[in-house]
Length: 372
Image 1 (spheres, rainbow, N blue to C red):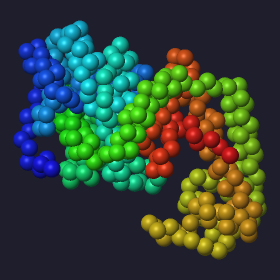
Image 2 (image 1 turned 30 degrees about the vertical axis):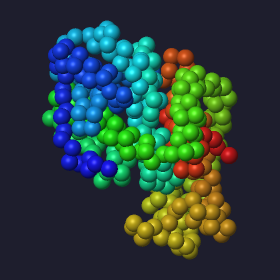
Image 3 (image 1 turned 60 degrees about the vertical axis):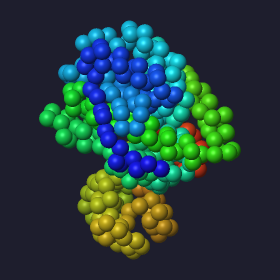
């Protein structure tokens, strides 16, 4: 394999219609090109495309800025017939084709993707694990496969002249000049990653990739769009029921601890230091384990389960935590998530290449996090 780190780089920030058409012609002239979009966020129902990065050859890429704070092209790219021709008829490779397909579909473009390096990484087994989660994001994959460290989006904002809060990372707040090298690299390395991975996926694995996994993408997209309808009355009543129970249990715990301490004790049962003080200083329970980082007495779920055999208060704290978590992550959270959408349905992200076991996962919100 050619040393990818020695390939000359030619990244272009498209500013004129002539440059735009030259880039489209280059992509149309090759068998396969890479497509990567920059957006205002990851919610395809509310966020917008702010730029398109295209790569037609290793080391060669161009960025078409559409919705940045400044530096955008001065013409309407969406009305150009060659762009629609490219996007809808020319096979492309993406990293996370479902997201790209969904963003383009929202503006009436049926993206003609053929390959997805996110899924290729997953099937090739060339990824690292973080717990039971597969680390197959583009930056992770490129660093693992090519030993090349790409610029992460957080670094891009840290280097920006504009002060942007971490919870407000939106590409439209940066200028096209600040973004284009980052975006071009994403498209470029997606194409290179595909070239390297495709040859390593052979036989039944390749057959499975294209007969099953790639075919599933549009099915999953349609499932996400259809959404899940919630029984809002049930969720509202269940949330109230659990909150009432948690409040009663909390009052009882405080009363029992205060009785033993000989004075009023009110503490945060989600705060390890507070719980540790109650269990080990007031109740004088034995220290079974310590945390690795601070060497403090442990208040983990596993430790509380063990202590519960000696002290009912430990069991009650554990129960309170479990009940309040059910409210915060499921019964109370899902209706709020559904309110974000005009149809009041729950639209989760279904992930087919995320869990090490191969099962589907879900996020934003996690609809598989069903309380027992």
